[in-house]
Length: 101
Image (cartoon, rainbow, N blue to C red; front, side, top):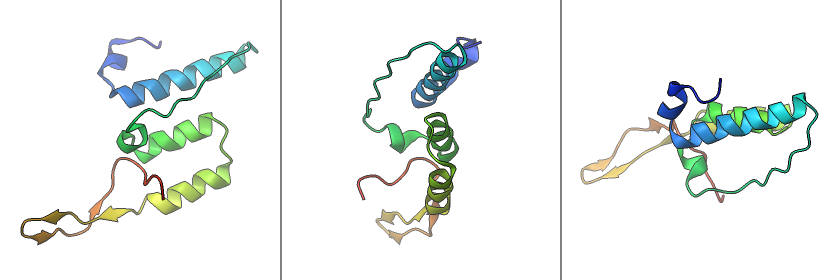
């Protein structure tokens, strides 16, 4: 189920998130011990779409209220790009979350 040809076509962050979720679910389902060492991979949260981040947070046991707050804060995010001819119109942010704020 995991290593289908489609799996290898996914962007690396999505594949890592999917595999992480499956391993955690399998351990829980079979009541097996699991030592999981989370790591902050550079640019990880810059590349994922908000629904994938929400799925990861759900899989890691974030409270529903926190997940709803993240959706409310970041789903409507827009940015303007500074170009040679001036600022663009606001564009929706489709990947990543603000970090370090």
